[in-house]
Image (cartoon, rainbow, N blue to C red; front, top):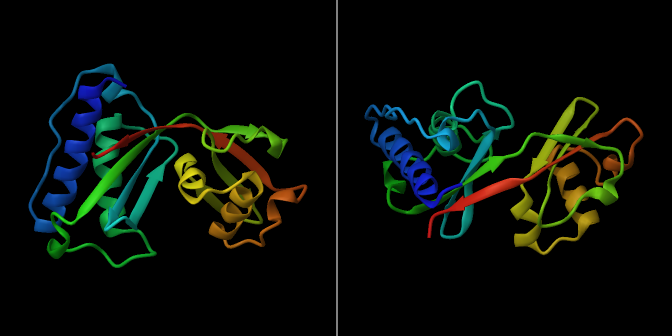
Length: 179
């Protein structure tokens, strides 16, 4: 993605979060660049002092990427069930990154997972877990640990990924980070 489009997405995400925390309206202005209007899934990750503060997203979207980014930014700030909703006291304290996702690709062989390149989406027994590609790299995990942690995220035993009825998917992400 072009650098100026990356900056636009980061700016839109920050404006959406800041306006939400200030309880003021925000409407993203129309974009016409094909990179910003594509229908792609995305995740928005928020950190405060380097610690995860919220991360939500979707693998598919029925709206343009720039609108999905603003929606997921607000959701990450206010709807991640692992954290209390952010407030105006958090303004200026957070950083964010946006992961623009490729479509999911079902795999039957876990050895096809490339740590640092792929994220994992796992479904088993009505539960699902997802970890973005950068998580394994940030944590220094190998493939097996990455799979086990994805199972934990889904609330499953560490070895659930080995079950015959577990469904594994991989995806890639273009990661856009605030500097």
